[in-house]
Length: 578
Image 1: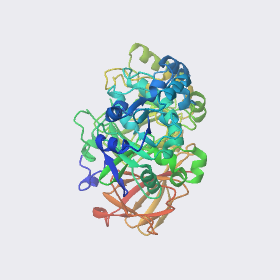
Image 2: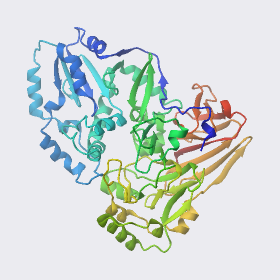
Image 3: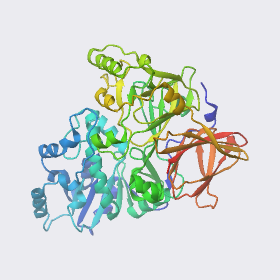
Image 4: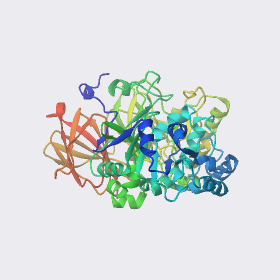
C-alpha cells in the first residue's frame, strides 16, 4: 500500500540543531590539544559504555593514564551492594539509590594519590567518576554516551557494567543492570559534574571522536529548550514486527528481518544532534531535560515530575507482522512499591494506519473468569499449550485515526496489520507479558513472561462495556475556526496526558498550556511551525515525524506547507493535563 503522505517527502532520520563554534576531531588532534605541555593533570569523566581503551590508546604514549575502575571496589563487593536493586528477576529491578562514590574503594584511591605525586608525565584519569579523583585538574572533560549506542554495544558484547564484567551476559541482564543501577548512578553524577567540565568529548562513533567546549553544549541545550526540535529516532526489529516503516519512512537495514519499533520521543533513550563547524555532536537527549528542565517541561510539570520527561511517542509496526504480546502494565502504587518508579506506564494506541484486518485487543470479556484465564496462561507457560486469547479478551477492529486509551491495569495488545503511534507516559519497560502467541524471540529463545506480576495488577472491572464507553474513540470537538477543527481524543481520566487533534487547511494558533507539547504530523506531507513573535526560525515537519515544543515556547502557529498547501492536514498533540 502506497502512502501518498510520503510520496514526495522523506522522513528525517537525523534532525539536528546548528550552532556556531569550533571543534577538534580525530584522536591525534584531540590528544595534541590536551597534551600541549601546559596541562599537567586531566580528568576525562565517562558515562557507562564509553570505550575507555580507545581513549587510552590516544593518550598513553605521552601521559600516565589511569582508569578509574582500577580503583573501584572488587567486582564481588559491587555485585553484593547492587544485588538488592538488580534482583534475580529476568527483566525487572529496583531503581537504585547508590551514588558513584559507593563504587570507589577509598584505600585504592589513597594509593592512587600517592602514585601521582610529582609525576614525570602529564596525568590523565579516565572513566566513570573521574571528576572525583582530582580536586583541581588543569582540564576537565566529560565523555557522554547516547543510551541507544550503549544498547548496541551491549548486544555486541563490547562493554561491561559499572565495576562488573558482564559483557558475556544476556542483553536482558545487561540492560536491567544499566536501567536500574548504572545509568541512575551515572545520571546523578553527570548532573553534578557535567557543567563543571570545560569540554565535551563525543565518542558515540568508534574512532571518530569530537571535542568541543562545554560552553557550546550549554548554548545548544539552551537553544533546544526555546524552539521546536526533534530527537534522533531509532528503529528495532521484533518477533511481531512489520514492514510499514520500511515502505513509508524509507528505513533501510538489510540485516533486520522487520522493523517493529521506532523510538521517536523517549529522551532517556534517544539522542539529540548538534551541528558545529560541519561536525555532528551527539548527546543523549535527556541532557536537555537535566539541564533545561523548567524551560523544556514548564515549571508546573517540572514540579510534578522533576527532571524527567513524562510523555512518550513511539511506533509499533505490525503491518505484515503479528500480534504484540498480550500484556498489562502496573498501576502507580504497584510500580512505586515494587520497582521504585515515581509514576506508571499508562498508554494509548493511536492508529496512524491500518490494514483491512487491523485490530486491537482491549479489556476483559464480560463473561471472563479471571482465575480461569490465569490458570490457562500458567498452563500454557509451563507445558507449551496454546492459549485462546479471544476467549477472554475483547478484539476490536481498528482503522486509521482510531484512538484506543489504555490506562494501567487494562489487558491489551495491538493485533496484526496495525501501524500504532503509542502516546503514553514515559516509563516503557514495565510490560507484564502474559502470552506471546507461542513464538520465540529473534534470538531463538522464548521471551520472558510475567504472569505473577500481571495477576497482581490486572483490573477485573475493565470489561467490554467499560472499554466501549470509556476507552475507544472518545473524540469530541472542543473548538473550531476558519479552516480548522480541534478535537479532544484522550487520554482517559486516570491518565495525566491530554491529547488534541487538529484538522486544518489554514494556519492554527496553539497555546503551550504551560507544559511541554509533543506533536506529530499524522496526515499530510508537510507543515511548518512558526513563532507569532519571530522568536525562533520556521521549523518544517514531515509526515509521521515527532517534534517537541518546549514550554518556553508560549505560543506557536502551524500551517500546511509545501505540497500540503491548500489541503486539509492533521496533527496530534500531547501535553500534561492539570
